[in-house]
Length: 427
Image (cartoon, rainbow, N blue to C red; front, side, top):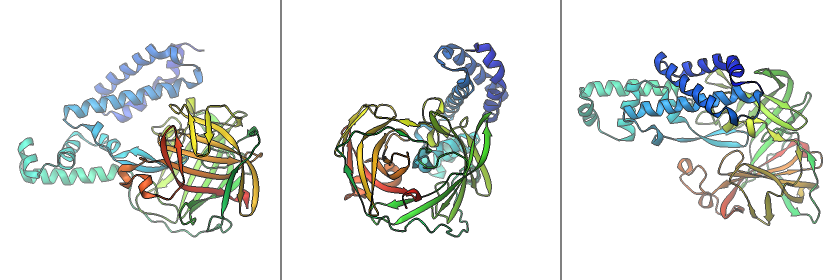
């Protein structure tokens, strides 16, 4: 592996841009950079591959910048660690959560953060704020108005409606009845080349449509048409560009809903892994692009060590044991494992499948069942939420919200069935 000095010479410019973009003060930025370089030097022995150095270094830089913002907030008596709002966003496996209010606050000026903290989180009346800051009440009102406007400009969730016609008619509006029966056979190994969560294989010429279905009504709540359109390159890594058009989807990047939204991915398929390299979408008329080097990419699209992606050569690992709806195993870290062989009967057709259980891979409160046939294609995908997932947002536990839905017990924790997914592969 190349030496620390050689790797740093190649990457220091990118890290400087990363830090100075986030921290306006030149002196503060230089101080943070010195901390980054020192930490990187001290931990260099932990790095396994030279190719991962840049992403690893950017990760250190991100943490050091966050540390700087937290320290800055304490000086202003703004406890940003306690200022949060969990907003469901859309990633590999549907909705997840992000601390978007905190991230937005970090982009504001000191005065804006201070006035918003005092008014909204400490819930102080304007007269008391005026007393504490030793400014007129009229100034408090003016500063609050300005801070709200500045926050609104930075906050990424805004209501927007787009016009669009539903073009795909193939997937049924009502999910066909299905049964899942454990087979008295050993699970078979399979070549699984689909992108985790979006079911398409990143290979030239591939097309796919998939739909999500409400577990109670069995009605289709949204569907997506996907197509691989050509080659693309991200940070020197070649992959395939994929266009995904979501119809009738709840708009996870703003409140409200829209008829149609287009996403574009760049993904790479190798002999051993399938992974996302980049994602982009239109937001308020602006094309937003994220790559595997950007903040929060791993939360929404990345998977595995150094974003290696999901394994394509699947066979049982013995990490999970499933007896009925009771699953046990070591779920302290991300686990993806085959837990048995099943016959899935859907729409009058029988499919010989293996069940791939995903526990805590995408989010620390989500589990899924993915039934794959011998071609490595998804027959049925089922989402389960831990009982307390997104409690702040929904205001209920899932056993209360969906009391009659199927439940899994995973190491003693209750997970509740939320929705299903099928693709046009089975039609």
